[in-house]
Structure formats: C-alpha cells, structure tokens
Length: 94
Image (cartoon, rainbow, N blue to C red; front, side, top):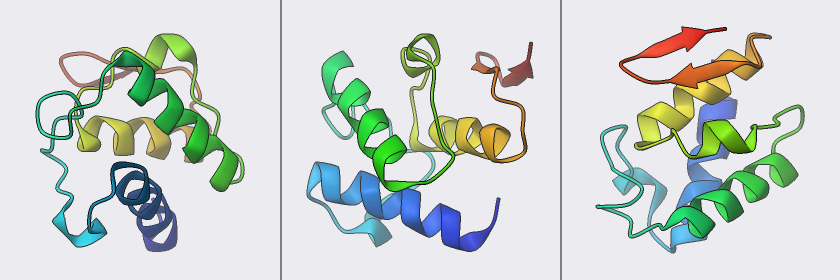
C-alpha cells in the first residue's frame, strides 16, 4: 500500500476518534483501545469510504476488523484488487 493511502486512512481514523495520527499503531484495538462499538466501527468505515477514493468495505468485513492493522490489511487488499478480503487468524482471500 502506498504511503499516501496509509497516511490518508490514518488521518481519517485519528480525526474520527479525535486523536493524533502519530499515536495510532497497527496494534491499537478499535474496541478496547479506541472505545469503538460496532456502530462506531461502521461509521468509521463509511468515513473512510467517503474520503478515500476506490475503497469500499463490506459490512460483514467491518465486524471482523479488530485492530488498526486489520483495517490496513483490508484496505491494502482492496487497493490491490482483492475486495473480498477476510480477517481471521490472518488475512485470507476468498
């Protein structure tokens, strides 16, 4: 994934949660560390889709995203043309 896409996504996440993008790590858990419930995560994905061209995240995948790193893997797979990425014990492609 290119650096500008990573920066853009991190900025959207940081803005949504009202934190500094530099404080976001791939290990940050959306629920435990950032306090995001299911609706927060869904709204975050919508914000990403609205602000990052070509990114569309399936609602089923949203529920499987636990960390910022998981989200980056999903976006990377979409960016690489594998839109059916799934998060589990690692990234898998259907």
